[in-house]
Amino acid sequence: MKFVFAHDHRFIPIDSLVYSESQFGLSLWVRYLKHFEQIIVTARQGSLPNHKKKENLVLSSLENVDFKFLPNLSNFKNQLTKRNSSLKLMNDYVKEADGVIARLPSEIGLLAIQAAILNHKPWAVEVVGCPWDGLWNYGNLQGKIYAPILTWRMKQAVKKSRFSLYVTDQFLQQRYPSPQGKTINCSDVEISPPSKTVLEQRLNKIEQNGEKKVIFGLIGTLKGKFKGIQTVLRTLQQIRSQLPPFEFRVLGGGEADSWRQLAQSLGVNDVTFFDGTLPGGEPVFQWLDKIDIYLQPSFKEGLPRALIEAMSRGCPCLASNVAGIPELLESESLITPGNINQLGQLLIKVANHRHWQLQQAQKNWQRAGDYAYDVLEQRRDNFWQTFVESINQK
Image (cartoon, rainbow, N blue to C red; front, top):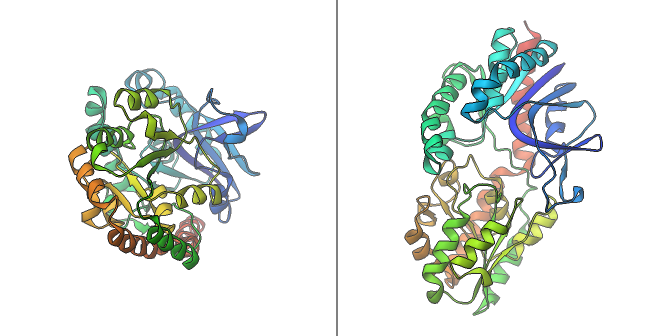
C-alpha cells in the first residue's frame, strides 16, 4: 500500500540523501511504514544553510520513502502563478497512491486533499497547529489578510475529513472540528517514559543552586519570530537589574546574526548565547538538564514538543497561553503572547523562588509522562490501522 504524505516542511537533498534541519527524521517514517509499504513525501525543497554542515542535519532518507518537491505556495504570487502546475504534479503522485495523509496547516497538505478528492482517494489529516495564531498574532499585513483565508480553508478540510489526528487534547479539536470523522488526540512528541532518576537530579540541582547564576533556556527555530525570542530579550532588558546573575541560552537552527544584533541593541548580548542545533534525544536532554527555567513564549504552536521534553527533564517552565500549551501548564505559569510586562513579573518572582521551582519540577515531570512514547504509539497505531482497514473494506 502506497501513501502520499503532504506538508510544507523544507527538506534538504545532499548527495542522493535527504536531510532536515529539525524534526522529520527517519524515525517519523517508521511510524507509517508499520501500516503502509511505501510513502511519497511531497514537501518543499530547502538548501544547506551557510552556517551548517551536513553533520548538523537530521537524516530523513529511509528505504521505501520517496521525496517529491513542490514550489512554496505560501505566498500570493506563487498561489497565482504556480498552484495549477503544482496541482497537476500532486495529481500524478496521488493517482499512483492508495491514499493521502495531509499534515495541516500547510498549503501542500491542502493541495494533496484537493487531489485526493479529485481522484476519489481516501485521505486523513494530522492537525498540528493553528494558522490563525501564526499569521494574525505575529505577521505583516499580508499575514493578517491571509490568516482568515487559510483558517477557513483548513476548517473546511478538517470538517470533511473522515480521519483526523490532533496533537492537542482539546484546543485544535475545538477550533478545527471533525464532527463526522474518527478522531484521536495524539502528540507527535517522542520521549521515553520520564525517569525518576532525572527528577531526583533536578530536585537536587534546585536545592543546591543557592545564589548561583540562573540559566533561562528556549528551544526553537531562529527563522521568523514565532518562538518569541524577541519577547525574552526585551523582557531581560527591562528587568535585568532586578534579577540575580543569569544567562539566556537558545537552542535552534537558523541564522543567529540578526538576533545577536537585537541582543546587542538591547544591551543583553553579554548574557545571551545561541547554541546552534544538537541531534535529537540525549544531546538535547543534556542541554535541558543545564537549564534552570525553560521558556516557551510562542506566538503560535500546536503542542510544542520542546516544552514537553523540557517538562520530562523536570524543568520549571513559563510559556505563552497559545494553542495547546494551557493543556500542559497551569495558568499561573502562562503569559499572553508578546506581553513583556507579564513575563518580567513572572521571571522576577520565580528566578530565586526555590519552593516554586521544586513544585513545578515535580508537576511538569509527572505531566510529561502522559506523552511517553509507549503510551502514544499504541494510540497512534490503532488509529492508522483503522484507517487502513477502512480502505481495505472498500
